[in-house]
Amino acid sequence: MQRIFVPSGSYVVSTGKQGIVKAYLGTCVGVTICDRQSGVGGLIHLLLPAPISAERVWQPEVYASTGLPLFLQALYAQGTVRERLEAYVAGGALVGPLSERDLEFDIGGRTTDIVESILNDEGIIIRKAETGGYFSCRLSLDLESWKTTIEPVGNPASFCGKERVIRPGLKEIDRAIERLNPIPQIALKIVRMISDEKFSIIDIAKEIRQDQVISAKVIRLCNSALFGVKAKVDSIDRALILLGQKILLQLVVSASLEDFFPEAVHGYSLCKGGLFKHALGTAMISERLAEFTGRVSSDIAYTAGLLHDIGKVVLDQYVASDFPFFYRRTHMDGADMLAVEQEKFGITHTEIGSRLADHWSLHECIKETIMHHHYPERAGEHHELTHVVYLADLIMSRFQVRHELERINTDDLVQRLGKIGIAPEQFSAVIDSIPCHMLGGYPAEEVNSG
Image 1 (cartoon, rainbow, N blue to C red):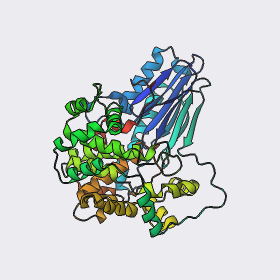
Image 2 (cartoon, rainbow, N blue to C red):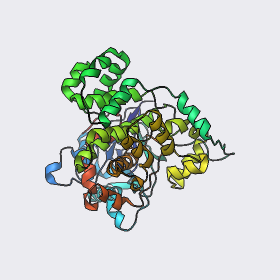
Image 3 (cartoon, helix red, strand yellow):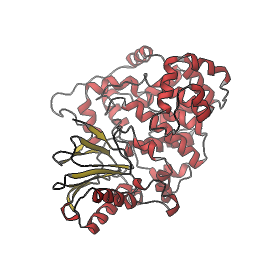
Image 4 (tube, one colour):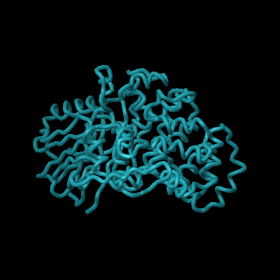
């Protein structure tokens, strides 16, 4: 049966074709609506409650206040009858355990309020609503039976049975680091160039062109929906013209790391390739946040975001062997990932990532960000970069929930935002400044946006 993934800021309307449409929701809100008698229905995946200003409605499907009316118009255009429509609403989770002041960050709650208000004004019955809380879920609509299901993300096979306690020692960790697939030297060379803020592509352009594997991966990334490049990229030279040398260097590093991250499901990943997709999204959002705040170099922020979770590569096999335990502790108990890793292994992915940074002789700013991106106030000289990557990681973990098993501490979110010059009332504007394709993930071919 065909499965259609609906990314944030888009919707699907169908006239009874076989298949299942689905959306993965954290802070985002998903709505399914159908008219069983007419055989028409669909799903919309909403990112934010309303535009920050009337001048910024560049993609109305992103917002509940503008996107849901468009979705309803599309349903009415297919012959649905308002009185027969029934809706299901899911998502709208909080960013994390929040203080009273932090409740103004409740983007999901405000999005849910607008959705319910519009549906009530239209006289559309809400059959079921599972919103709020701290959970991530998958909303699905069967286009043949019109049945809607709301399930927790991850879906571990069982939480029962004897737990497997595997606690690798430091010697075993170091051996695992030595056994890792090597990152191409060209990638490490570029990382060091970016960290030192030296951007001369002349001495490495020839290497990029001669490496057919990396060239092919770079071109594929350029043409993916995640980067939003409208013109077709068919060569490294064409990519250089369209993107510029800095972005091309970033893409070469990203493409080089794709094979480094494991693709198996039920380690840290909740989907195939989830670790890499999360790292890539965090890198892109880190770059945008650096531009928004003006506190750190956007190029270094991209690189630090890309490498922030590199220590998970070493621990992934151990997490996979006891996935139900990690799922329960992070998704059901709401425990911080570092605390769970320390409980289970006696070492965290940030500590292992720091060891990898030493192994590869990475710049201190990258190492510090890898080590402290969960608790950025612990960083030293490069605390602003670490705070930028922390916020990018948090945004990815709440708006793109299907990629990896993660729970990020938000106890001091207001103070952490302040460290990079973001006031609490600007939080929505920060999310609004991130292009939707960065948060939308990897859409299926048949997803129709607006």
